[in-house]
Image 1 (cartoon, rainbow, N blue to C red):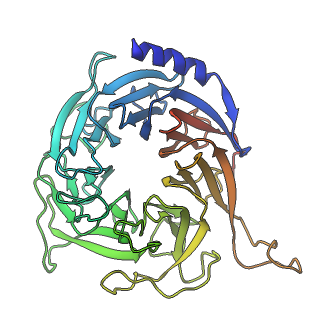
Image 2 (cartoon, rainbow, N blue to C red; image 1 turned 90 degrees about the horizontal axis):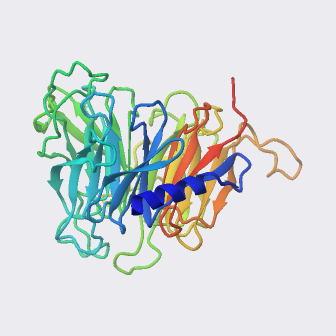
Image 3 (cartoon, rainbow, N blue to C red; image 1 turned 30 degrees about the vertical axis):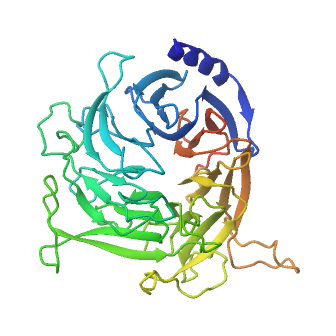
Length: 462
């Protein structure tokens, strides 16, 4: 009965469009969703439209909403789900969902279930659950092809590990990956990801970071293997699996990873300093993502940037760029950051604070929303009344900061408010209406809303 009521309510609310603060976006309500926390976008039913999957930690539910009428379909009813990551594991064209649940922020001795879910044959039934592992305070999941074999692994990133007393006394988190088991011949396979279930043997990436809150995955050096960026109390780090036949201290991954090699950990930035000496005071980084300025998305080049929310659940939107100046981003040159061991960040990154007015920043999306080849940054916060803001890098020199009106050589980040009065917990970018423009989906827990922002900006054709 509750599901039927929510479907009817969603249909009514979806018919009401609300102008956002930016003329580029129009807000539409997908559903009134109780205390929602995370959201993902994928085509669940194979009709070519991007559907929305949402979860609520406090309401113990996971559901998907069918585009375009946003009919609700139940996925799971589990205790305190915290994150999800859809991916077609067996190559049949239907995505499975990796799910982290049993999240207990202040209790590191219980919960922490990681599982994958299979879509049922009968619509309306709950998805079949397959356990992977148990690791308390599980918090983030991502799919990434870490070894370059064409099949993605599931990356598991808890905030901290057993024996922790919350952020005041955190033990290092288990940054692990789980591989899809040996390939099974599937005549319906459309991808290389044809395989069995996920192995329950962890591939250890790192066990040194605390209050690990954000993670990003993507190929940043064009080697066919995805790298990971992490945001934690220790700042931002890059993790890269170096596949080699001859390498010192090489390790052999678990079943499903046929290559030997070694994980390389590179320190990027220390993030924001704690404002006081109190144990557990927010510091470091909370969310992280990579954006493109031009050309290739390669971290070693000044053609990309690293965006972050800092410190943990922080008030700042920050951009890190290479020191060469080629990116043309304005920022005073500061000494190269060092990690706790005194090792300088690779390549020397400069830090620029774009905004310091967020309250409990919790969502970060980097994507090209205006089609100009340069990625924008969207940040959401849940504290106070909540809100969303976008940052757009100017196309050319900015004259506004010169008294004589002459052109400055730097490109400026322009701050564009998107919405207010919406306590954003999570967000994702996708073309929901198939018009060639990226739209935005946001879930707002304290506002009890699941919404999407239609991108109605001018479509670039160049």
